[in-house]
Image 1 (cartoon, one colour):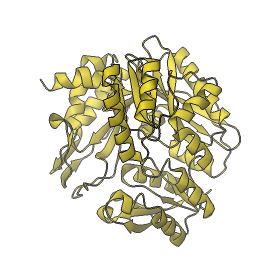
Image 2 (cartoon, rainbow, N blue to C red; image 1 turned 30 degrees about the horizontal axis):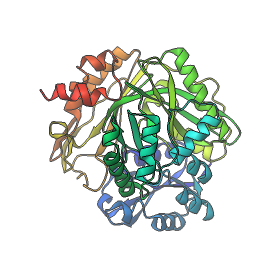
Image 3 (cartoon, rainbow, N blue to C red; image 1 turned 120 degrees about the horizontal axis):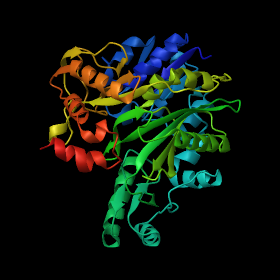
Length: 449
């Protein structure tokens, strides 16, 4: 096992990794920007190193500073968390060249799955169904030809990034050229590469993902599915496990497909294979995330497995022997962000004057905030995650309502706690009748009335 791990991240995921490391007897090194000097992960780690200014490019994306911090502190591994450098193959290569273990898959695997058009091709080769689409398009005209070939409705998507940036829905050829140009400009600004690809738009799709972990000894384990269809601007808002839509037969098929892809590319580490599932339960591969996900706690709650611990053990060369992973009960995760949902989810960071965290049976809070902490303006608006568990989905929903009603974050910040309480009262959520467009097209307009 590793002796000391540097966490190249911040916020709740840095805190989460520190806790698993401590339970495994691993020393931790926190890196932080000048804006994060008072952040909780800095207090909890065994050591901490300031790596630059408040802007991500000055600190959490500053590879030379992070490598220097690892070498100076004597860290023998780096955990990238999610976001920032977690899917940057160049960073993984530099870590390996410096004799520091990058906790994630190989750079070659990251390159393969990071290019979404290539990943689609690999999935096809592995026998995993994919949404009909194109290869990489490097110009507006090239993409326009693919839109005309496939036929609207189609999605134009950034080939080298995610999170909904560089993505546009095209329902008519006459609007295609403008929308493609906008998507390519957005992709260039967000990821430094404007290449896109085109895929057929699936009507009323569910976004279902399979969590998996593979060791370096040929073992691949899947942990059931997560329901991630409640999205706003292609960003997940609430996740749950298992999905209220997926039956046992579909679960087996999705898990088999995810495992088949992981084995085909000799994957190592934690990863998530994402699918679109139509109303007839046909499923299509869309991408693979080669890192731990924000929503991993719902899987932990229904399987009883510490995914960060398994990720660390896999990276350290352990042979995992998990047997058959069984699902127990139902878990829901609410992303608590410093946003005002009544003003189009406008970010409202600031100082937290009062904080009361919910507790009790089946309640978990992953966060980095505390009373007196000032939320910086430079980063993602995620303050933390409330995760609840119940023996049934109905019980989990009621526990979620109770826990959200106990959750108090007062001060200059505004949060999405009121939004989540209203969401739980909607018929679409309570009955599990939603797809990736339901939140924006049906639920949010209703909440604004």
